[in-house]
Image 1 (cartoon, helix red, strand yellow):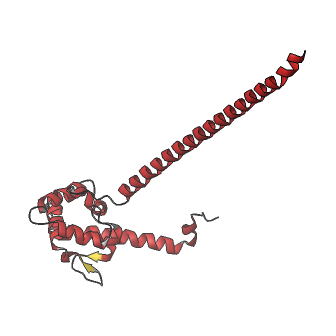
Image 2 (cartoon, rainbow, N blue to C red; image 1 turned 120 degrees about the vertical axis):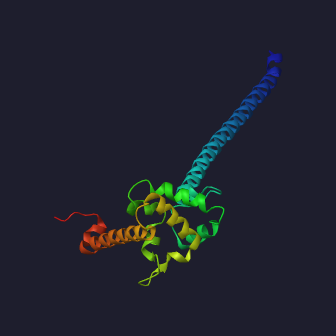
Length: 196
């Protein structure tokens, strides 16, 4: 019996060592689980950042596409700076390319509607051909104006190009004035609320 009592502390020590090793193993497993969950979170965040980045890139493309070498991407001309830039891009060598590009847009329907594929409504409202009535002069952008006249001449060969452009711009301006008049007449139209 004495030998069993002498062996008891040894057994207790072995049990404690085994218990400590189990605690250490559990701690290591918990650490591994924590690391794996952090990796999963990082992967989810990485995917979310990729998705947002793609969304931003796509929205930038649709907002104002500008590709080098393709004149179709220069239209519609949204701002006065773009108007100046496109005018500078059009040279003697590229005039035909820009004329064909504008002609392609203008053939898609009535000129009074398709002119908006070339110029934004803002440009059309602030410019006229000769710069009359406190408007800016479209003829000042000589290269662009010549290409536009050539394109219009190919789409509407029976009428003078300037007269066709004048009518198209006049139509856009009339439509804008009607829209403005409707908004001014109906104060609830801004709120998109129907009158009772």
